[in-house]
Image (tube, rainbow, N blue to C red; front, side):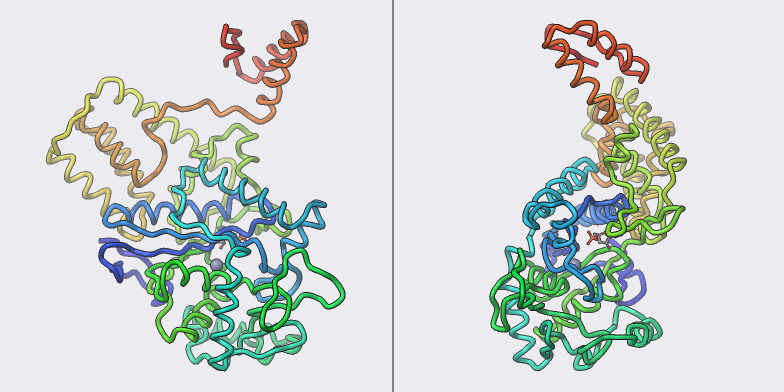
Length: 458
Ligand code: AMP
Ligand code: ZN
């Protein structure tokens, strides 16, 4: 039985799904205006670990959205749409930007061995559901109009801010009081934004209130309820979403349906850089490609994340990534030896049973991945037989997702990849002098190139 920290009640609770046959879980997806940074990716790794652990006991309908419109530069509805800004930055259409970064996001997601969600929904393809939700809120008297959009009146929702403590809520109300323009309350937020009258936006739709685009918060609530029903078991995201995005989602959904929107709110803590905040919009961030260029495997990063609890801040450094890489490689080397001499066994010996139970208990104790990892190490070093060890590794890896039994592909840097491509081209052109020079350069990087009838191999 999974015990998980529920932000709604500020404590660990037993997870009991509404439907014992299938749990529902919505995870806030990426805003596809730039590369995901390794901080964002930490959150998706934590969510993947949660899905894998839940799925040990029951099927889960896992949904994730793609925010491809409406997320403004400030989560509290100020500034410009991040997609429109990226369009100017890169000289491409907002649609091209979204397509490019969504594809890139899933490449990272896959290489980190995160299981794809059962449902992925793009905001731009669900505008009617968002308009309908705003209409319901309007009919129930929760909205008002300003010169730039339709807003939600947070003073009308008695439970506003239940995810955060009173002092934090007061801070939000007074902190933003400096200038909140035509809004009635500092915490009010846009449900629908009007397009400017003097220019056409790239992403805009007609609505009963005029041409415009949806607010970011309404996107998640409308899509989540469309696919998962009015009450979800779980809603996840990074810790930054608690105070505004998820607080506003509760206000919208519960005002519209009169029902509890989410039963378990689960949040992952941030990855921080020693130099300060990792920010996608400020451009100060490290991507998975940065790590790959330096020769790390994405799974080194996954291993690093597994070593820290998802609810504690993790400070990123290359020293800790080096340590994670060394540990993961050590683990894989030990497992490769076990694999060589072990045979498949089907019977559950008592030591296997007990060790698997302890492993599951660690994972089900609010995802204690560090303990689970150390139990795996202990078992590998133990007196158990190699056959038992092989079974245990297989079992543990369904939770950890480290591809422990797969042969390690040598991760080569992007620079080395370019040299290999250049060398293949030089050989095609029969420029053997150049090809030899490139072979020497690659050798200096630790890559031994052989020419075979199948082409060059390394
Ligand atoms: P975004 O693409 O900005 O909408 O964010 C995608 C996910 O990453 C959200 O769940 C955020 O809460 C999360 N996130 C943003 N920054 C960090 C960080 N530094 N560490 C961990 N998660 C983050
Ligand atoms: Zn969201």
